[in-house]
Image (cartoon, rainbow, N blue to C red; front, top):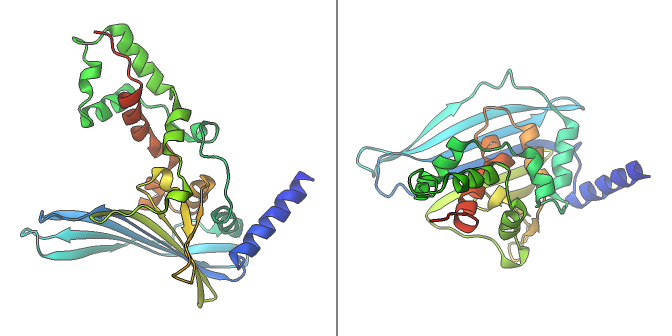
Length: 276
């Protein structure tokens, strides 16, 4: 009965998507992370494009993988793109069911923005990780051996390594679809996913990775006057990671384990125990 329910649920979700994998000829991931150069020379933004096309009736394959560095010249005013096309021949084939899973998750809200789900994907931070975040946030004094009691220092490091109050942290970051979409003008950290139907019709999804885990994901409506549909579901992250190659810039940035630094920063601000 459970298996039947899951199959029926998957069918309904894919039908609501408006297509199935048999009609999807290409999937394009576009991810960009960066910000204004502010007149400074060097790399100010990184852009990745990954194209996935049908290969057989059971598999897809990656047909293009571009990494683009957007740069400002020595004068800070001359802009250019440094494009690298990666060799894709050795990339593993992608099973059709992996694409089907991604379509399903992009159209399904799940109650998994919580500790029970997230913690299984987290690697415990080491003391160097904790001190690195503390230095970055001007909180290193909280672990100074000359200022902080040794037992308190040990307690705080132990709590952070065991994700103390992780549920409270996640609740503070949980997206609320009623608040609308985040708009930031001078920097960007965004993902778009296009599902192209037989080279013609396109279904578009997008996400802002400024938000924790890039949640929510939105399905762009064809009518610009209609609000996009938002979905909160961390299975999307894992579905994307299951498709992309190890060398992917996006795969690295959408990893649930990336929450560690944000959690450590939150703990140092909200939960630190220091006795003077």
